[in-house]
Image (tube, rainbow, N blue to C red; front, side):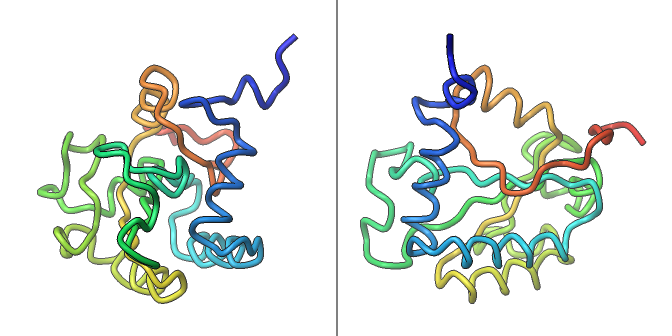
Length: 169
C-alpha cells in the first residue's frame, strides 16, 4: 500500500525530498531561515492565499537545460514563488498575465512593474535570501494542472485557508 509521501510524489520527488532540497539549496540547511521567509510572505499576502515554491530550488536543477541550482555561483539561481488564489491574481496589472485573470507573468527584473504592491515583499525576500526572487500568481486550477497532470514539482509553503477556493467567496 502506498504511503502518503508516495501519494504526494511529483516529478519523482516526495514532499520530504522537495523540502530537503529547498532547505539545503536555498536556505543553507537552516529550517529557521525558511520559517522566517514564510512569516514575511504570510504578513504581506491577502488572506486565504496559498504559496508554492517551484523550479530548481525544489528539484535541484533547471528544467530548461538541466543545470544544477546555483551552477553559476552562490546566489545566482532564483526562487520562483507562486501566490495561489483569486485575491493574489488581482494584485497584477491586466498587462501582467500569460492567461488573463488566471496565470500571471512573474514579477521579476524583466517585469518589475506588473504588481506594484508586491515590490516591497519581493525586495525584502531578495535581501533575506541573497538571491533573485520572482513572484507570480495563479488560480488553483493552474497549480493543480502543473503538479497533477504535468507532474511539475512544487513545494507548498503556505496552505490556502480551508474552505476558500479560487473564484468563490
